[in-house]
Image (cartoon, rainbow, N blue to C red; front, side):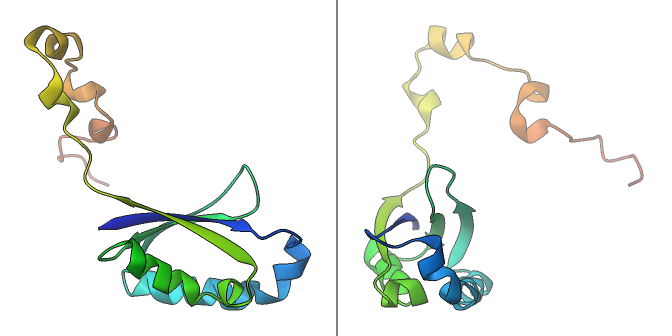
Length: 122
């Protein structure tokens, strides 16, 4: 299962507060990445913090991994976890008329962008 986790600094915590822990924090994330536990990570643009996508059995497992991060252990972060599953097949909800109205040629689909016939040399 994928679990999306995002953090917030606790009141009074600043970038200066956490600066000394950043190398250990990043190293811990890298170890989890290499083990396939962290699948994606992003920096937030709305406020200081990160978004991490875990591949774990449930949200409690993600929380256990999050608790091991140095900044979590120091009490600097508050974490929020959102368990998610495969996307709902939206097309299954369309009637024939609606399905026809959203029909797209394969070349217009995102996955087809940059695809070639496979005969060109790279």
